[in-house]
Image (cartoon, rainbow, N blue to C red; front, side):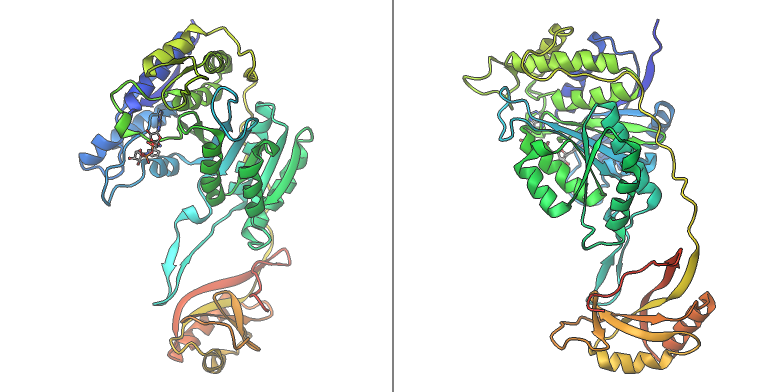
Amino acid sequence: MPTRTPITVAHGDGIGPEIMAATLHILREAGAQLDIETIEVGEKVYLAGNSSGIDPSSWASLRRTKVFLKAPITTPQGGGYKSLNVTTRKMLGLYANIRPCVSYHPFVRTKHPVMDLVVVRENEEDLYAGIEYQGTPEEILALKLITRPGSEKIIRYAFEYARQYKRKKVTCFTKDNILKMTDGLFHRIFDEIGPEYPEIEKEHWIVDIGAAKMADTPEAFDVIVMPNLYGDVLSDVAAQIAGSVGLAGSSNIGDQAAMFEAIHGSAPRRAGQNLANPSGLLHGALLMLVHIGQAEVAQRIHNAWLKTMEDGIHTYDIYEEGKSKQKVGTKEFAQAVVDRLGQKPQKLKAAEYSTTPMKPIKPSTKPAPKMELAGVDVYIEWPSKKPPELAAAIGKASGDGLTLEMIANRGVKVWPDGSPETFCTDGFRCRFLGASPTLKQTVALQDRIAALGLQITMTVNLRNFDGKSGFTLAQGQ
Ligand code: NAD
């Protein structure tokens, strides 16, 4: 008797219970070895007063099985309800979001007949760290946080995924022509790790033109890895242009646990009518089967599903008069897949999964660089908005090894030699530099600034690492 893998299942809301029943029926009939624990998440839990949509007791199941197959849920209207996806991602440390986007021409209508790409999105960092501050009446800041270990993990995951699924190319999207340090690090790590995968082609695109190319010519891409925000936007674009939102699945992978789901929502208007397409959740479940070492079962199901597509047995969302053969409901579609287990598609490319498990992603081993303090940026609220006046006022705090070097507004240098045309708001950044100042000297500087009656809104220490500047110059500096 093969060992069964424990998994946690949530049947969700709207069409969730129907597509989950269909998916589990196919998995069972294909011989997936699963030990299922069921939990309740979503609307009922929210409305019972739990703002996270999941009961504390359900975490015990997730921590035990570490594998979560989740049907879509409905987030009730109105404020105060936290996104269950974000909560699960953060609680379980699910750092990688994987979304394969494939078109099934000529069986499903699409503008891109040969599209077959996978978006690998970093899931925990970037602007999604949610670190925001209001500094002045006019100015609010958000921190874009990119770390070396976080970037190494996701980029290595993209390459391991490419190897596992016999993909030929990994593309990296960043905006490092502008964000030289954060996106620059992501790009640099891509260039560092890439050579460890000599059989895989590598390329980098600036995200704007890369996104345009992807929307226009998706067949030019294979696996695309990107930081969180670009990945969030572009994985939706990729899924949409592939054909139907009802078809794609996705996985969220962490070191300890993983979550698998359809990319679409709970489609409440279609609920309870045996109408919904279960394919998105089924594709999520296939990623799960590979993750838990049951790739052979995944391959059998995937090929039977491709054959069902080819045979024109379609749910309403992809049914097309003249092209499709039979319009079926959720249950009948699932049965059609079951009836084709053991068959392969004739025209579409057959699925081929490697049974060698994917290598675990190792943590970073790079030694910590040598750090040296170079100065401090002091953010000041200055309602009169006149840089020379501010320079005269704050310049009095220079001394004790730290000198006012420049003042910037919205990233642009406005003193010395600012351009009179530059529009200023009430938030200024005053940069003080010195020759290896101590932390104490930077703190004493802030005391002197406060004693001058100036309003400090934020300070950031300026540091060099291994002799290289750890901060950018202002525009125009
Ligand atoms: P949706 O994805 O539920 O529906 C968008 C459109 O696609 C609708 O016309 C729907 O009928 C159709 N559709 C979606 N899935 C389908 C399927 N499997 N088969 C056939 N047609 C399908 O998006 P929405 O209407 O914006 O959101 C509905 C609810 O789902 C909201 O409460 C939203 O918060 C939630 N939601 C949940 C998740 C999740 O749980 N991961 C993701 C997105 C939205």
